[in-house]
Image (cartoon, rainbow, N blue to C red; front, top):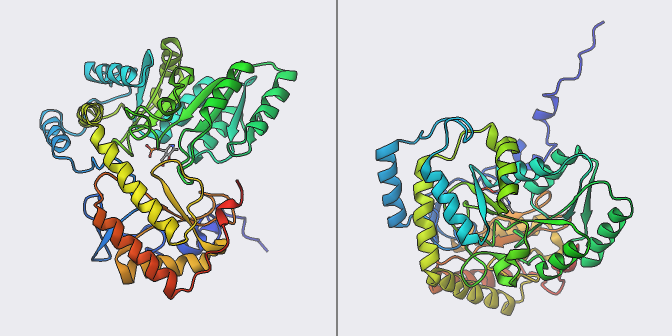
Length: 418
Ligand SMILES: Cc1ncc(COP(=O)(O)O)c(C=O)c1O
């Protein structure tokens, strides 16, 4: 009698794994909703126009005419494929180098390196730097790209998560590593936490990293182009940009494009350039994005009005939600989390459906593994392209939904897992 051997595909027909309950049903409502049209304040969902709060188009540059023109001209000149090959072989151009020079100046660092995706940039940068004897100390709420980088760089052994934004916990780990220290220490954290909208305490973290002779990597995906007077990010906001050893930004959010950048000291960036496997073994950023990013950087450098507009919309939305009794936690950025009462998945699904179907307001729910287990939130992203009307329609929708579902807003679910 021959018994069937276990097959790695056995799991695929089950409801296991991330979001399995939705996958097995072929859900296209709560996961992978089909959204048509340009990313912006109004989009089409299931054939119906909705007010959109779920795209990271902070500065409203998606669809910008000047950027579109640059893209069309670049495609005409270079197609979509230029350059071909990795930067180390045949994928380097003077325009890539010029853009890196401009980004370095913008970020007030001597050097920078472009990547094709933020995710790949984080993985490549961290894994190029951290060796066997080194230790990573990582904020527990850091984005999956940093967690994956830590696992990859340390073979799962030598990284230590500290409690979210808890400086005592960070210091505890730094002190303990220093007792028997063999290698270097890299502290890694988001600048703006992408789900909760709070900021890493960079004033304290930079002090601690100096006290314990560690290095600091900030993934500022949600702060780059958004935070600080000039949009240079969370380091600028705190006045500690010079103390960040490696500043990382993605172009997928405020820059409304694709790609990422790591900036730091020249010898460090050159080491990364030659050792980050996601740079060495991947095709270089296509010219169309190099051209687009150069125009976008111009616009963001010259135009603080886009950020001012984004903040105005964010304040109106956040104040209105709090006045309605919703818990938006301790956000310090435009990111506006709305915590689902009692962290209940059923309540979350009713809220989402009612907002979308009855009020034409689109929000996405966020659950584990994106946030810790037990937390469910809607992550709303106010942008420079939203109007006051969009906010007011949305607040009216939240009020209607609150009353019709008889939501009990007395509990404060954001207080958990702080
Ligand atoms: C904090 C953070 N890091 C990295 C990434 C990945 O960036 P990209 O989408 O450019 O790959 C994201 C995107 O969601 C992010 O939020």
